Image (cartoon, rainbow, N blue to C red; front, side, top):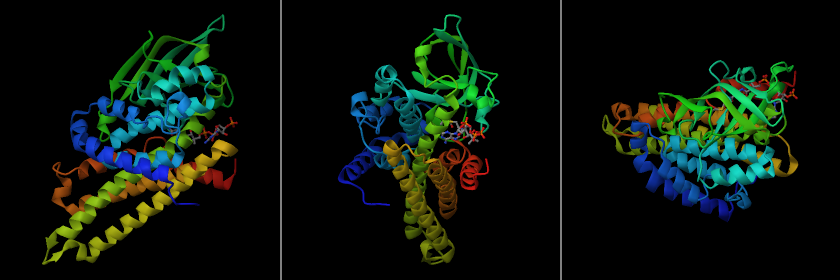
Amino acid sequence: MDLQLTEEQQMIQEMVRDFAQKEIAPVATHYDEVGEFPLPIIRKMGTMGLMGIETPEEYEGAGMDTLSYVLAMEEVAKADVATSTIMSVNNSLFNYGLLHFGTEAQKRKYLADVASGRKIGAYSLTEPMSGSDAGTMRSRAVLSDDGSYYTINGRKSWVTGGPVADYIVLFTVTDPNAKPKHRGVSAFIIDTDRPGFERGKVEPKLGIRASATSEILFDNYKVSVENMIGKPGQGFKIAMTVLDAGRIGIASQALGVAEAAYAAAIEWARQREAFGKKIGQFEGIMWKIADMKTRIEASRLLIYQAALGKEASKTTGARFTTEAAMAKLFASETAMFCTHQTIQIHGGMGYSKEMPLERYFRDAKITEIYEGTSEIQRLVIARNELKLR
Ligand code: CAA
């Protein structure tokens, strides 16, 4: 594995670090407190190419590689995890699916808008009664008699960007009799401006409060067959393929917030004194620092490995499912570990809203849950290793 960053990768890393620290970090606490979607920041990131890092230039993306995407995600997450969530959903869950499974017309009409940041994209798989077991969804799309459109009814939940999204990649059942049931799921591009689409309850969340998560509702929403992504019944596989890419983004944001917490821990341990010494001179603190650093660097290696796997897949078509799941699993648990330990090292100050550490801790938790819980990542890894089914 070649770990030497190219000039282009170093350039995007520095550019995003500079932007994130100057323009995102100072307002992150405000957006967290008010729970407002940071639209001006997202628009600006769009003009910088950050909403379509791997999308080819012909569709108004930056045309860069997966490692560049990972590096950029990490830098944004160091400043604010919620903003990196929005970036991840648009880059991975929306753009990647459309790029790989969309028609040329769909790419021209929808991908360019989202990759340039003019429009906000979202991804909708989960339903109130269908989370980890994603194949059990109840929403339905019924084909019209003349075969020209589908009518969609149902309720989807936990849609990142749901309150503001312009376009949504939606997974719903077109064949309820399919066996196994996941082969009855199809994917569509939804234009939220059309009748029959409604935004539902906004979720009051523990963390990533600025990323705006809501239910979305379909009441006899009509969508042209031209908006189907892939073929009828191919939706579940598209959803899974896209999540493989998405999980690398989530791993990168987990790494970013772990590093932000770690940097604060180092600074505090070097300055704070107790019992006549810097607290970093106590073994109890040293062990925490050592464990944090080791887990952070191990996460980075797993993420780079997954990113290289995804990059290679562009030419070989080989899957990188296990690599992505391992990176997400380890990095998200590292983010929880580091944000937890950093608060412990800071004591009362870590618990105070005067520092961003409690936000890091609240934000880190979601990385163990969305785009597949840690339990689902373990299941994916183990199944792929055991090959029993
Ligand atoms: N790539 C391509 N195809 C895949 C695949 C992958 N990674 N994983 C599975 N498949 C295919 C299988 O080959 C199989 O295909 P066939 O029809 O040819 O047999 C089919 O998909 C079904 O696979 P499984 O039998 O393994 O399916 P399962 O029902 O046992 O479920 C699962 C597998 C891994 C548990 C899956 O349901 C899963 O990942 N669940 C978690 C869902 C999730 O991550 N949800 C988060 C939603 S997004 C979000 O968080 C919101 C947001 O906005 C950020």
